[in-house]
Length: 227
Image 1 (cartoon, rainbow, N blue to C red):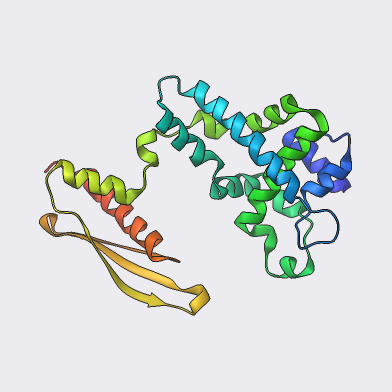
Image 2 (tube, rainbow, N blue to C red):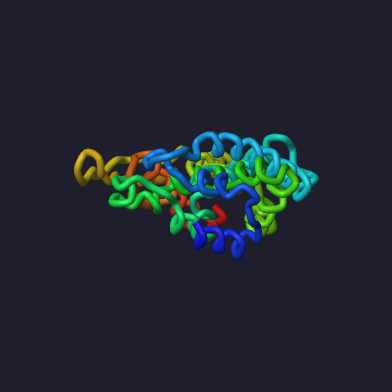
């Protein structure tokens, strides 16, 4: 664990009093020994509170709904996994042989859970204040660059509202192709606004995600229009 401890000290500027907590935080359930699921449960709760407080302070004029959206954008699995990858958490995970072979150190859910487990372990090791300081440090840049709550709504909803405000018909989403094996399918869709003679496409692992991509591209095109 010496390498992992050195990484933690350098990256998060923290040293554990009880190093077994740190080892547990990095241990996935696929490996032998105590895994990080209980610590992840605890870290998730601590993270929610700290980020709620931080967002509340950063956006003093935001209402409850917007605060909830902003918090959700920061603590969702994809955001946590990205943060964990940037910090290098994956290099120090303790995984079972099967997970190692299949690239578990890059899997979003594993990375996100491990980061929350580290927060939970710090909370048990040194208390709430220490956990809060690390969480705020990890999220510092993202808190400084919080998007407008308006931008957090999904693309399809924003596109629908844009069109309705101008009394246009709703967009037409069409599934044009499904490729790949059952567990690795790719969905291709188009988004068409007939009245504006505009069509965009999107491709992803689910039809919903593909539609969101197509809608996002349509919004990018419409950003410069003033019909």
